[in-house]
Every structure is written in C-alpha cells, then in structure tokens.
Length: 325
Image 1 (cartoon, rainbow, N blue to C red):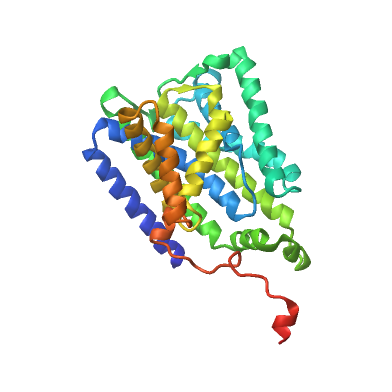
Image 2: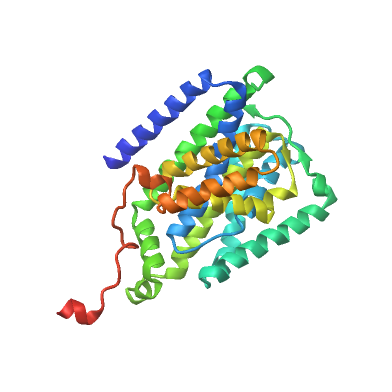
C-alpha cells in the first residue's frame, strides 16, 4: 500500500507540473526543463552520497547519456525521444557497472578523485575525437515523441512533459530504493562499513550498486538535456559541470528527493538573473547564495520541510562499555 500511495502522489505531482507548463512563458518552460534534467544527474550524486560515496565526476555519465542520445539518429535511425533517453541511461549505467568494482574498493577523497580522473579522461577523448565533433561537439537532431513530429510551436512543452514524466518516475524509484533493504544497507555502509562487513553483508557491493544507480540517473539527465538543448559538447564531462552538480547536491541536502529538483531550479533562476543584472560578478552571487544556505540551513533546502529523521547513518556508535553500563 505505501508503494501504491507514493506512486499516486508521484503521478499527481507530474500532472500538476504538466498543467503548470501550459501557463508558463517560453523562457521559464525552457529553464524548468533544463533544471529538471540537471536535477536527475544531481539525484544520482545524492544516492551515491547516501551510500557512502562522493562523486566529482558525474559529468562523465551526463556526457555519455548526451552523446548516445545525440548519435542515435545517425547510427541507428532512432529519433524517438523516449527511446533515446533510455538508451543514453543504459549506456551510462553499463559504463558505471564496468568501473564500479574498482572504485568500490576506495572511500572518501580517493573515491571522489578517481571519479574526477575518469571524467577528465573522457573529456580529453571527446575533445580530440573528430568523429564526434571534437571541441565543437555535435548538433542534435530534433526528436520525435511517440511518433509525433515536434513542431516548433509545441516542441518545448512536449519535451517539458517528457522530462517531468521521466524525472518523476526516477524520483519515485529512488524513494522506493531508499526504503528497501538495499537502500537501508547503503546508509549503514555510510555510517560504518566495517560493522556492515562483520554482519555478513558486502559494503563494496553496496557501494558499487549506489555507483551504478548514480550512473543511470546521470545518463538519463544527460540524454534529456542533449535533446532539449539541441547540442552536445565535451564540456558536459568537464570538471566544471561535475562541480555544478555537487553544488546543487550540497544545496539540496540528502533528506528529500524533491529538494534536489527545487535546488536545481533555484540555481538556474539565481544564475539567470545574476547573469542578467550582474554579468561580471554572477559567480559571486552564486557563491554568496550557497554560503547563505550553508550557514542558515546546513541540512540543505530539504530540511525546510523534511525535518531531521533519525536513520541508521545518523545513529552514533555507542561504545561497548556504555551499552553494558
């Protein structure tokens, strides 16, 4: 029953957002679509952080999903936006599964720097590969949607609806995962991986699973972004893109899935208006905004409505002597 109820809530949210898109101006519709698609990549980072990892290379999966979606019309003749998004997600997940066993043996800054290194290797390969446009990138062919040709008049709205639908489904799946045995085990790994090993579970396998989920969500976000933006380039996997995703993850916190998308939208709005009114100092405005949130809401935006729930990861380790006493 809780699963059915949560799915009904997810469907209701998707319908409300789709209805709101009919009233939104074109510039806000594009801004919202981009922020939601970026929110998917950030959601992957949050899942990984809850599982005991930290990624500075989420741009790698974001770029893989984007380039796969961009190349589908030329290589396989696939133009449908849904299929291209799913193929981009699967491709990123496969790459994550290849590197997950190696990365799962590390923790902390070593794990994070290895993800950054992999991301920058891909950046170098894409920049030098003339087959995918090199540093100029690729122009993405306009997608179709379930057989419908997206005319300029309705393309923005239909892509917004698609983005919302896929994002709500992904967010619901993450909520289900968080409340599952595997999700609770991932939190225990973050709290004390050695204790998890003593209890007979594999902390490395749990972290590898979180990393694959991170890759799947990053690839889905990149595939959607490529089709909405109409262009892909190596900067998708640059450290600046990954840093922006980490920025949003810190801004959102780990207590609420919805907070990830709210934080992504807030970042896009703050950046757009800062760039408009403070073109030479908009980075300063963004930094000040993040500093304000960290000082007054260290738990992230999600703490405004989610509260601080006590989980396995939040439970401090009690010494044996105190327990006996």
